Image (cartoon, rainbow, N blue to C red; front, side):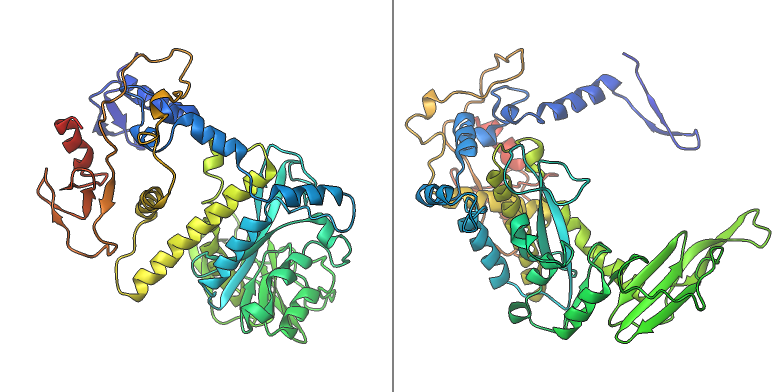
Length: 467
């Protein structure tokens, strides 16, 4: 195998001297691929095994619970099967108990700030069900969930799974009914600014929202019903970047702005232009070359829209991560995992808001998830794999085609790290190994130890003690 000892910079200059051969690099990549298989998290191997999942639950028990996960009452399901094909049939009966509890909890412990948005999220399932796909370009095994989120932090305040039949009798279409169902002024209140994409934006919808005292803004298609058809003072095809045209239709403002392409915006609370600018490259007079970045005017509605919608994007990326490894076979299990992800992400956002209100340093996303895992394990009445009478006879997870014969790591008891305080700013105690401050203690050994990516004294100390 070749030995790449020098890493070259973009300009061809030597930047870093690499001492190890590329075999180390390729080997590390292969290790990462090993953990794309769920069973390998329970693999008993000196080099490739993970002790933490085995300490909590055996692989076979985890797989049994995952496959048998059921969210509703079997008696109610039997009664609902008799109503199949009738108007009384409840298609979401298999998820209703947990589904409604999480929805109510999301609305109980938080109330959105002024800027909100409606977005749709896809849930992928291997199962077939009566919940139909929503658009032509979507896969047959993808189901849509509509969510109302806070633009300030991405908190999901309310959501629901799309059920085609529930909206089939309405004439306004998919872009109207879900939005009006989520924007309930009786619960949400009034005075909000709603930002939506062009799928929802329509003059009819914006006028009805304004009657509820909820203002709205979003990009709109020029061929949308209600868009002004006038050609007076229209924008030329070869208009320069930054060219702007606007027209008012009573309470609605329509703005056209030329960037690389023409963009149309509709709003019920913006002015056409408030002096905002954006940097763009503009062609020179001879059209031979472009000039350096220059400031060109941009509509206030577009600036406000981009700023608020960008803040919500990360909340759509936190879900579905577990399904890359473990793919549910039932559609209601897919909904469960997605709703669970929403609850976890909302809890993380509430933790950040609470820390800010108390002038404390908020936990990072990774630290929060680690503490949540330990808390769930600590409070769970489920016995661990080592305390179970049948744990000694549990079936190990299947490994790769060439099973490893490495003996499992010796562990006489269940060791668990725990934070001595919930306040991240509190001064900790001295670590037993490195003598630096830490807030983590091994509850089994009653020893203070660092448990950080940079200082993993917790595992180092236990390896030295052979426990």
